Each structure stands twice: as C-alpha cells, then as structure tokens.
Image (cartoon, rainbow, N blue to C red; front, side, top):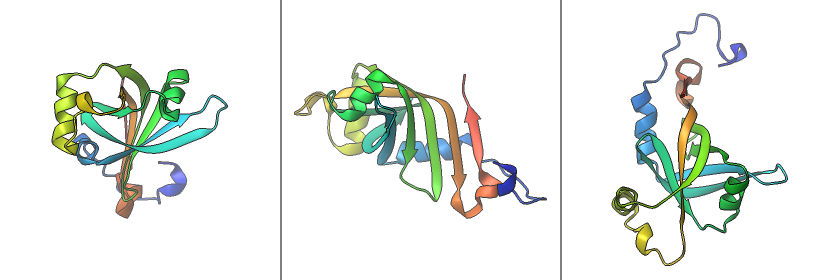
Length: 148
C-alpha cells in the first residue's frame, strides 16, 4: 500500500491466502480485462472457475477478448465486489476443454461447455500476482501475493 494510504501507527493485518482463494472460487462473474491491438483496454464479465490455482473461463473464439488474448496474453481478472476485492494478474493461455473443467462448469452454472451450442475457447490464467483487500479496512488488509 502506498505510504499515503497508511496512517502512521496503522497495524497491518495481511489477509490469508484462503480468504482470496475462497472468493475466487465462489465468484459467479469474473471481469476479464484485456488489451486491444491499438493499446486500448477492454473489460467484459465472463463465467469462470477457480480451479487448480488458476482462473479458467470460456468465450467465443472470435470474441474481442479472445482476439485480444491471442495478440497480447497479459490479462487482469477482477471479481465483482469492490468491498472484498480480489484482482489476479497473469498470462492467459488457451487450453483444451477436459472432463474436470466441464464437470466444474456444470456443477457451478448447470451447463456443459462440451454440449454448448456455439464454439468455446477455454483459457487458463495462472496468477503472477494477486491483490486483495476489504474495503472496510483496506489500509489494514491490503495484501499482495507474487507467484513464480
């Protein structure tokens, strides 16, 4: 947290990783932020999963977000809540749909990507950095995790 946000004498109480992981797992919608080829940002909500320490989501392979990722795979994913913020930064890679992902989508959203009527590109974002905080005490709870 920048020094200007933290009053002198503030007791920092970092959030446990489980707090962020729980919110990543239970979130219904994930905001995916990509970069257009001309450098302008693009943000869109998607359904997704927190599975095996990664964000997994699907989109039409011809969508703007898919085209953006294909050109520039750096990505930011934000959960819906600004009161309990969790932000994932990483690199997206297109992966094959497998039974574990299909079953997890079905359990969460009552759909199967394998039987979806239109094509779906599946992406995996392995976090490079995750930031999280609670709005009610963000100067105390702001936490950042970095991954190799």
